[in-house]
Picture (spheres, rainbow, N blue to C red):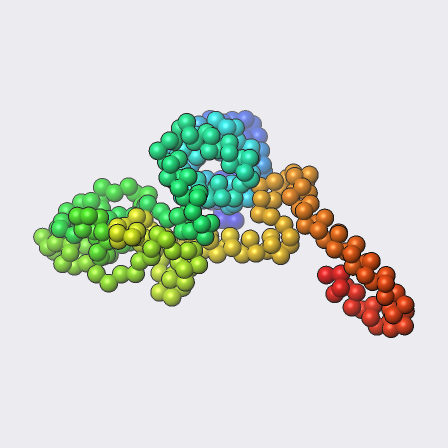
Length: 329
């Protein structure tokens, strides 16, 4: 833990224990969202809830930004403990792809509550959300971002730089995508190229036309392969008409790989990913595991009956006993 996070943690813990929520609010307003997300890991369950509630009430957009940077188990914990009103407020300030991620990893009953709340507050995005939810679970829709910059091919370098200056500071700009009048992706130009080029020439004269893209219909596995093959940081996504619809960042691909690894471990253990959501509810987890436990018990019972028929053989050949665990498995 860095000294900055250590000081932030102790200060917040002290203020929360004294119920000095005005001090908590002042601290989080001045603190970078990345540091706030980091300190969540070192707070207890109740402290995390209070901190998120304070964020929601003081700066809902910052609360949404912090939430996106939290670890998955902390996100699940907060989703369980926030009221419907606060949860709706938070989700309505998250991008659609983040909402899809949340809904993909929560139980059906909680999912229904969220969708019901979103219908009232975010009707337009709900339609897009439902469309994404009906696609293949391996579809890349949930990891496509809209925080990128695109410009028309016929503007000058000077005009492009003005657009860059007026772009939201939250958008990380390394590459600017170039589109034609029909929003079809035709090239890319780096920020360095814009800065070092004469201001009166057209963007289309300095852009790179050979660029790597991926179809919106691609699977996550295919996208992972593209990132590995070309050692990319960011990958533009196009539709069937070659229109630019979004981008995928390497960090999102890392998250996908991590999720797939987690899912594989759960499958190996005979468990379900929903258990992350119910990690503090023993009986709920037991209910989730009951089907495969009953199946395993029934299988053991059948195995015991079969072995009983060969009890005489086992008595004659004791080394066979060493193979019983394999039979049981």
